[in-house]
Length: 336
Image (cartoon, rainbow, N blue to C red; front, side):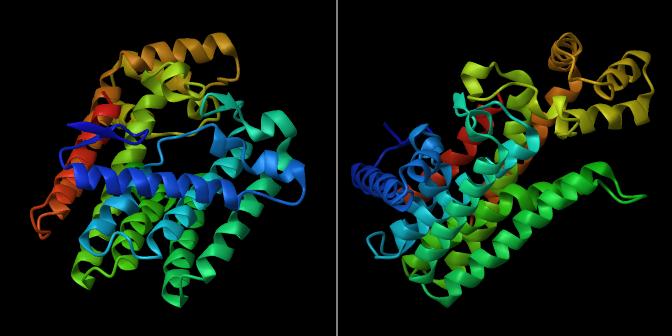
């Protein structure tokens, strides 16, 4: 058993390993090429997060999905570059919205160069992704456009909050489906589609990607609370500080509504207070790390990862399918 890629997926088949490694290397070269500009400063800013590394989770999924057709088809690697460029662009914008200082273990672009440069760099990456996408055909453009609309809608829904009478957890799952699930679904779709896989396989891998994407984000929610910065590459409790209610907080509030325990109410009130104060923020993190709500959020992660695994059932048994199953396990492992 060997390890493939920064995400740490292990595969048992040497030919599959070679294909995936070669594909990821080509994607990395494609990312560096796509982020070059005649203006050196733009190149520096655009390559800031590329060079910081990352899990390359989405390109990995493209490479594995392509195994169900021709993994060497000419559109596979460019489509993976498109998906990762789009993801990187959203990170630049997210860090501005969150006022984040750290991303992938380095200073965020907004902390280093200011919000305007970070936003414009994200726009530059979107433009470069669109340029590559244009060569992949109108169907690829349509798929990406629909996913991008869902991604933005998810972000707006998160900002607006649930409408009156809507269950906050149901609302949050809609947010995750848009913000994270949509683009990871595209990774599965592009890999299968560009490789010429059967339409049934394309649909299966799209559904798988959507469900895995939600599990992936739920794991991130847990990591934001449970991990240290050296593990996650960003400042723990960023969402807490910004007043963004992720799954652990929503599970706490649900518990308050259901049980009304004094200690739960006290913690909920602390989380609703001004957490820009470092001492109060540290206390909130410590208490939430010990609370059953965090374990419930872990169970939510497991449930959605199992849903992703179940989506793979129609696919033929092969090494690529086994790797996709293991990817579900890897997402769960991230959440502890």
